[in-house]
Length: 195
Image (cartoon, rainbow, N blue to C red; front, top):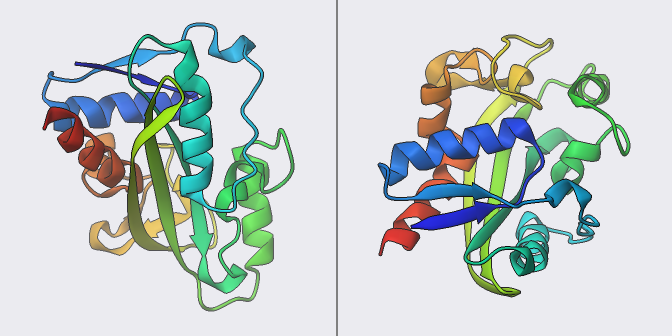
């Protein structure tokens, strides 16, 4: 079985492939959308992760010959009233990179004791413009005061996962797959695909 993935984020695609390989046990093949970079981007104007994932899946599914999934994921910080939330990738502005987003997050949390946070991932599966299913995964942690670890991407070096005693930036890819928000959402999707 093949499903296409609508992302231009190399880190996300690599993580998706690892997770699908792990949970799909070679029964699910992950495909890329040819020419995705040259397509006009889908407007991510939804107020929730699910809304944005559904918009993207419906939009990009017109460009592949089968099922396609898209995700919207990000960091939700309690003390920031849910920010950066759906703006996680653009927290420091359009085109901002991981370093700028992380720096702004630390600046906003300066002097804040409650650093509880969670990663959220919503995935939508669509075919020819019709959303067929959505899945959601979450993982709880807290934001530490400075980045640790070279693994992962995005906010991973700041996201401390208590059961492992390390950040997602320090965890191995396999450790992260087992507990991450993407891992939890993809596992649900793979089970749905294989039913």
